[in-house]
Structures are given as C-alpha cells and as structure tokens.
Image (cartoon, rainbow, N blue to C red; front, top):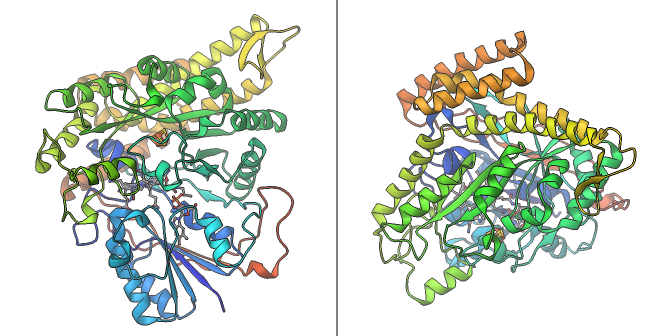
Length: 583
Ligand code: B12
Ligand code: SF4
C-alpha cells in the first residue's frame, strides 16, 4: 500500500558536528537578526511549513515528521510502514539528508526516496544523497502528479502556528500567530535570490484571491484560536489586487486580523502606508540590501523615509542588508554597514552574499571560477564565512565583519524587542490621533484610490476603531518585557530609550495593571535565570520539539469542492512528545 513519510532533517541543529555548524541553528531572530543581543534576543523555532502544506494536499496517507532526532527517524523507518519517504532539506543540511537516505536504502530497500526543497539545487546531489526522485520546484503539484492525482484540485490550507518554542528573556511568549502561505517564488528575480530562482523566477500562488487568504485565516483562527498571522510570501505586496481584496473581505466580515510579512520597497510604496495600516500589517521585512542602488526594487526610493513612516504608524521593520557584495572593499563595507544601521529599522539582518546553486549569481561566479572548491555544504549558510573569492577579503576575516555589524547595530539602537515596543506604542498614539482627526474632519476611506477623502456624513470609521484595538493589543504584548529590557540594557542610551518607551506606555494606557505588574515580575525573575544560564553556558541552545502527525487516507473521501481553501479533516495521532530540550 502507498504510504508516504514526509520529513525534515534530523536535529540537533547549530552544533559543531559533521552535519551542521554552530551558526546554523533552527532560529530566525537569535541566529540571523538579533544575533549578538544575548538575553535580549527573542527565541523561537518555525515549523517546516512545506511539510504540512504538502501533506494536507495529497490523497495518499501521509505522516509528517518534523524535527526528529536520529532515533525518532530511524524508528519510523524501522516500522516498515512506508512505500515512499520524502525528505525536505536546504543546501547546508544536505549531509543530514544523505544520511537519512542511506538509512532508508539499507533498511527498506523497496522504499522510494524523494527529495525536495532548496537543497535540490546542489549540482552533485545524486552523488551526495541516494534517491529515486528529485522535485526541483513546487512540491504540491509535483506530488499530486507523481501519485497520479488531479494537479489542479483546490489547495487545502493547513492550520499551523507561525512559531513554536518561543521565549523572551527566558519567559514563554503567550501570544500566538498562525502561518498563511499565499504562494512561493517572486518575479523580481534579484540576481542572488534563491527563492526567486527556485520557482523559475515566477510567483506561484496557492491562494489566488483575497477571499482565499481570508478563508485560510478564518480556518486557522477557528482551529488554533489566533487572529495574528505571518504571511509566508516572498513579496506579498507585489499582488496589490489580492491585498485589496483581502482588506475588502475583512471589512465585510468585520475581522481586523493582523499580519507580518515580507515585501520589497517598491511594492510597499505602491500600496502606501494608509492601506497597509488598514490591512493590519504590523511587521514588514524589507530587503534594503545596500546603499549602492543595485536592485530595481529599491531604485529611487527614500528608504530612510519609508522606514520612518512605517514605524511612525506602528509597523515594525526588519531591514536586511548584504555584506561582501562585489563593490565592497574594506572601506565601503563599513559605509554600507553604517548606512544600514542609519536606516534605524527596529531589527536589522546582515547576511553574507551567498552564491547558492540555481541562482544567476552562482552561475556567473561558477563561470568566472570564483566559487571555492572543497568547502563543505554545511559551512555555506551565510552567517559565518563566505565561500567565494572576493577581491578584497580573505575567507577567515569575513566572519568577524558580520559579527561586528550585529554588535554595532545593538550598541547603536539597543535591543530589537525594545525598538519594536517603541514602534508599537508610538504607532498606537499616532494612529489613534489620526483616526480621531479624520472623523472630525469628515474623511472616509476610499478603496479605489486607497486614500482618505472628504465624504458626506462620513461618520465613525468602525473598521479603524476595531483596528485600533488590534494595534493596542499588539503594543501591550511588549509591556511586561520592558523592565527586563531596562535591567539588562547594554548601555546608557538603551536604558534611556527604555525609560522613554515606558513613559509612552503610561501616557497611552496609564500605570500598569496588577496583572501587567505580575507578568512583568515573572519576566524579571525568569530573566535572572536566563541570564545566569547564558553566563554559565555561553549561548543557550534550544532545539525545536519533534512533531509527528499522521494524516488519513483521503483517497476514500470525496474531493473538497467548495472553495479554494477547502477544509479537510486532520486526524491528529498521538504525537511523539517534544523531546527534552538540551537546556
Ligand atoms: C522559514 C525559514 C527558515 C526557518 C526554518 C524553518 C524550518 N523548519 O526549516 C528558520 C528561520 C529557522 C530558517 C533558518 C535558516 N535558513 Co531559512 N528560510 C525560511 C524561509 C523564509 C521560508 C521557508 C518556507 O517555509 N517556505 C514556504 C514553503 C511552502 O516553501 P518551500 O520550503 O520552498 O517548499 C516548497 C518547495 O521547496 C517544495 N519542497 C520542499 N520540501 C520538499 C520535500 C519534498 C519531498 C517535495 C516533493 C517537495 C518539497 O515544495 C514546497 C511547496 O511548494 C525561506 C525563504 C522562503 N521564502 O522560502 C528561507 C530559506 C529556506 N532559508 C535559508 C537559509 C540559508 C537558512 C539558514 C541556513 C540561515 C542561517 N545561516 O541561519 C538557516 C538554517 C537552519 C537550519 N539549521 O536548517 C535559505 C536556503 C537557501 C538554500 N539554497 O538552501 C532560504 C531559501 C532563504 C534564502 N532566500 O536564502 N529558515
Ligand atoms: S524582491 Fe526579494 S524575494 Fe523577490 S527576487 Fe528580490 S530578493 Fe528575492
């Protein structure tokens, strides 16, 4: 009988062994964004979204095994239950994928091995990983075709949390968000971009309309009880029609969901801040890359102004910049680092230029003989040393530039979490005043021009009043963390900023309630523990918990037919319990 195991690669991540590297942990903020911020760095893992999306959308019985230990993986294989094993991996994890495939081959020789994910771009993949099939692109349609199913069936969106295992100052983060995956790929086709090239420099939508996205949000809200979502889309604002439909749908149904997403500067500018705010965007990741206007997406845009405007309206910005670009020498790299810090985004990611297979950059560098042979794949992850010949930098010195850049940002602007609190509270006060002013002067929202225009009997803006509640809720999430931010402030500037933020909270909401004070005390107490542990152990390593879900045989059930986001039943089998955290 056909039965598929879909799994990610085995943990642990981010340790020094022959399959992974210390700066390749399974964490976004702590590893790549709030790196070097110590106890101030928020911690979390993200589920491997692709596994759940694919499992939900094929009819053969599937089991998802996310973040297994080696023992959990081999136990699953030893059960002999699977005719097919699909392994999802990115390039730095190819050795792990290879080991898993060898185990399957030697213990279950009749099982077919399918590889998918970004790691499939590795040119010599078949030498490194024993396999039968490779899916180079989008996995849902590939698996449907492979198992002889209808490729064009509507997508069933899975209900999954955006992050798990989340902590701040050692305290568990209570507020939860769901993840929505509108599509994969991006048509902007920046030369270095792995995700754009993986999907043939095209956008591949799963949720084609705003209504589809809204339905996915509703489903996730019902199943997980969340109203805040990460929109896992490389460039969400690039499809303004769909974004407008989503707002229309939310207004019609009286739902003021909130969103974090990725978008390029030109697409954000085209939609405008009034629109984004009304839509509920409270966090934007913008690739600013470099002050040398190298990319179409930032050409002619005043990024400093754009980021300040977004922040003034309560939208936190994570800007990302690339180091070791071709024009960088020992002087200009510092100019670029200073420029990126000078944008004053809440959070700032520095990544090294990484020629990854499949991209135009890789092809050019390969032809020019710039890729250095013999560097193991696990080392090519972007947070340590570069792996190509740069005219001005030796490999070993590159890691220090990156570390320095993170430290400079931290010392200049303080903890990322404090910056986000500042944006949230300033934004709340500003938006509240703007809504009141518009109501006084009779302005109303015009969905055509995406502006506020004079209107007859405009009356109260009911949707923006709801939105204000969500902005307030977002701001209040940070309040209990502020006293820990103050206690461990890295310098006087950061401490002053923290006091200023606390004063703004008092101005907006009055003194802390008893519950807020209790929460704040708990965070302070847990922060002491976290701080002691950090001092004793150096960096605290948190591994993601294992998740195992068996999906039923949907071939026996009628196809979901109502709408693009059809809801299929998930039978959650007993999970392999979260393995003990190596804390
Ligand atoms: C979420 C995320 C993470 C999470 C981890 C999530 C996880 N559980 O693995 C965090 C933040 C921890 C993270 C960390 C890192 N990440 Co990351 N991450 C992403 C991100 C933003 C989204 C991935 C995602 O879910 N996409 C949505 C799903 C639906 O798309 P997908 O994964 O591509 O899957 C589709 C296909 O690839 C295919 N498919 C995938 N698997 C399989 C399996 C089978 C069997 C089949 C048939 C098909 C198939 O079908 C899917 C549906 O179409 C991507 C960028 C992006 N937008 O994709 C980067 C990305 C994957 N990350 C990347 C990198 C480099 C890293 C780090 C190495 C960075 C670092 N130095 O810290 C670390 C490595 C962590 C580790 N130890 O493994 C690179 C990978 C480049 C490459 N060539 O491999 C990407 C592409 C970013 C980039 N543009 O450079 N990451
Ligand atoms: S805009 Fe962003 S996602 Fe799109 S191609 Fe450029 S770097 Fe990639």
